[in-house]
Image 1 (tube, rainbow, N blue to C red):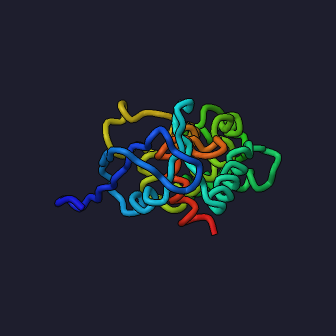
Image 2: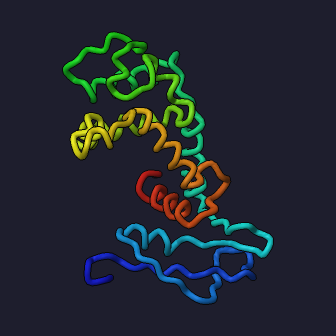
Length: 206
């Protein structure tokens, strides 16, 4: 723990001659700073496997982490489908969270441009993020309404600098997180992906 309240986590450089199993062998240690307690707890349970022929290490998963990753990947694979009632209702719920005083005239409407969709039919903007990107936007709007509306209406900063299609940006953020955390791989190939999966399995997967 440093004098500013941040915690330090020791991350060891993995030796090239690792054997398969759950035991980590290390040579020298590298120290990086982490700002949250769960980061340290996650790192303490992550073990990397590496061989000379590997481009980068892979990380072994516990059975519960494997199940959690599979469940998440199943959700990532769900495309937005405007013919599915559940998807329609989620889209309407997002509109009601953003514009509670304004009645939505239809799932295809010029009104959607007010939220930052590219056209009058939001379903055409979900290609990169799938249904989970809509779920993430709705979670953001429901649990952090002030921040959601501050970003939607660009209430902070110079409007000309902050001008961007809000809803499309939200879909793109989901897509980028999937790529950054390597969530479509069989198992994590980066430390950040392994730590995220550890955190997810502890806090969100029963």
